[in-house]
Image (cartoon, rainbow, N blue to C red; front, side, top):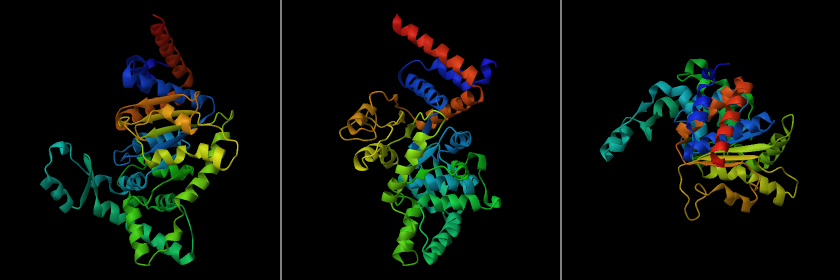
Length: 352
């Protein structure tokens, strides 16, 4: 296969030599190593990545088996759905850095909710989904059903009439995850638009809070999910951890390893890979900016875990890595040759 059939991988291998680009390259190569050896990869997604349309690259990666589990914020969960039902109604604001307060007041009056340089349309997104989701909650209350937060969204996106699609379903990671029945946790789901809407229905007595399983139950489920993933694959390589941003989306799932070891007092494989893409700087007590080796002291990672930190914008780095990984998967022999050559050049440079 010609070099230009793996254009992103070739570009990264040739150009990403130092600083954050080098960390990106090395994390990409190690991710592919982990996949080739039969490993699984667990993703933690914070921030507003769904509004930033990460689904364009994440959904194909899920469908191709490059992602095997997810921890996402409640906002990312619902905003993937919003992009599917209201994509054409979003508005972009590339000049947001120069806005005055009156500009944002105008956006509010237009019933839009700005997220950096784009905005979610209230009527076309929130209210459309609300008309479907609230009756599901009411029915669950009536029947006494209990589900995890994401299970309501999985059910909704799978039953959603295609006539309601505005966005490309191929770019909806929530749809891809639901179709694949991907294990997922949504820690702190109360902190989201629909978390607030659900709370209001609980307050008025229309919905029973117990129809949504708790965060503690999410962790109990994650014990089982992690055990299955760490044993999966032909060689049982284990589970890697790929993190975008910080906060609860990352801190919640990575704790499953020491919790199984110390709290359940059961044998457990450590995380087999770690990469975090974040622009959060290391500061006193900051989890988001903590270096990976700090996690060794919490028994989340070990000295032997391949560790990478890319201090950059995940909207740039993650799609590059995912596209390169899809190229690797499509032609592993050519990919291995490119990676081998790049590593040899790096080794040669170190020996000088």
